[in-house]
Image (cartoon, rainbow, N blue to C red; front, side):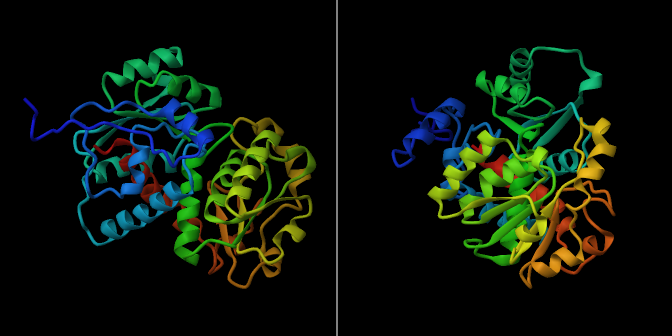
Length: 353
């Protein structure tokens, strides 16, 4: 006899999804149990993300990204007005940290709490070494998803390949897609329609830039980057991002001169010159990157309404001046708060049932 309270649900792949995307979608999607019903409170466009692993941002298309940002804005408004939205009652998120964390730890923990779920964290120093394939299968017995903040991106891929539970990239040496979601939410809040905007990234061609390249063009944002010759973003990622940009009427441009890259930009974005894991290069990098700084002089070359962004933490006086940080068009702390709201939308899309 059919259970009327928990009807059977079958997950089908949308036929409208492009063939190249469908393969990646099928690779990461988790089959639903019979009792899993997607709640009406979650936008219909996000139902295709149920059970998905989120590793680079390439797992989602333009429609899904727009729906995520719309939903994040709804959740943010509800939180600010004190409305409960406990969509993840009974859900558990495992959080594994192999790198230091402030924004990632707090945003995921508070987010799960806001949504009625529970986040459980584990530092690498407090657990024994295990193969990623074994570790994720162990966690699947306790939790509904795992967020990993790690060094090697391959660790995330090995976990996701097991299809035990959804895997979320909290940061790897190659990608930082959750940060990019928060960044795009911030830009959306400031500008509304993002199509035709220009985002200029100044500095190290690192994981943050990689994720912006892969996700920002889905909103029709043109991306420019100005990096020293030895510190350009990964060529293969740029090639994939360029293809996504072309499909969404956006462009990606490579500059060496930050002043040229800043001309008319609606967003100036930077990150630390030396990322975690490269501390031994700090002195050498400072000499190379000294011209790659966001300051008021560079801001004057940008669009009159240009906003200043940084994923944090920052080193004032290095990649960004204190004047730029405290400028009335700086949105650094709005960005950091939006990690919470963007990730709540992502968690709901992946875990709600």
